[in-house]
Length: 216
Image 1 (tube, helix red, strand yellow):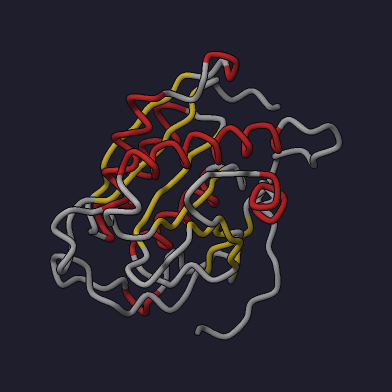
Image 2: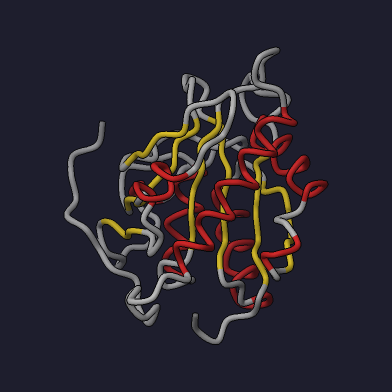
């Protein structure tokens, strides 16, 4: 582990489009009640981000500058998902959908001089294989969708030298309540922290890139 603080920051998103209740924020609120477990020895901080590119850019930078967390986990909703998806990487280009204020990033880019793709230092495939969450499937993904949650993820990976994660959760339903999603977040983040503590993990001195692929 590097010199970062013991703080872990988890964010969810506010309302957008038809999602007046965003399951990502509901799940994060449940996680804040549960905590990460006494054996984790970390301080959990949670906050809501608006579905607003410009505001997200400022807030993500402030999180890393002010708190210097060991890990930031962004949680977003995937309206079509039936499972929880752990996103391995984030892409710099293709952000063409307008946010809640009708804004789109210039040229659809997160950072004009940034790498095409940045991958998390956490092996999401390993976490998805180990994590057992009763009542919901956990899957691995390499395409986070190019909307505000993916945008936040790219910026966190950039500021945090790869020490970030993005979890996409399904919408709330009678068989998938916020309480279950909150428990799932607890289990998954515990596994991510364990993955980061593995001996031999490369030094978190710089983010690393993986080959880009075409947008889906």
